[in-house]
Length: 226
Image 1: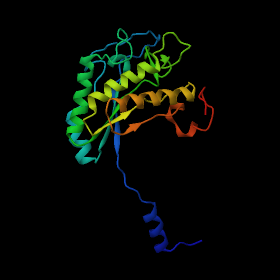
Image 2: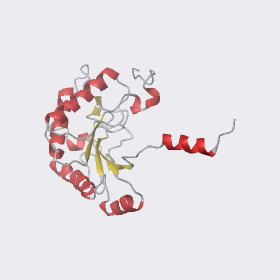
Image 3: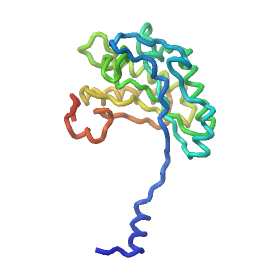
Image 4: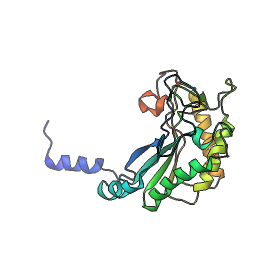
């Protein structure tokens, strides 16, 4: 079957869409904790600029002006933001938060969006061999696990610090996996409740199960419920 140029142009026009967010993932804040022997606590709290780092702000003009990027996902580690001595919740390591906030502020002051990304796979307390190690948040059968309530308290505190910055986007969690999908949804809703109760009205990105892979969402893979 032959298509006329007019028909092809019409189809192309109808398939077009506006791209609101074009971005890059800025890893670094979660680095420096790997242990070949899975030793808990390795690299914690870590040394800024040695074990971990956030965005190199001098690169922002290149990304934004030359590459036309307007969104940066900035990864951080829950065990650094909320040290194990405190537990997951509303009490932060203010030094780590300040380092993180410097990157977020630089991004949003440059007119771009910043996605806050806890890079923990819906786990907390042992990132020594991510994504495999650590207790699943909200797992009531694991006495070492942080609770869903603690996760909500964490997000309420973090969102409260950014509720006036309209360029901030809340990414609830990076790639949950190997856990009941019902618990992913419960934790997602708790985070949403915490964010909104803090008065933050910005966009929220809620993850699914199976490493947030759409190809897994209707299947039972790797211990993930469909």
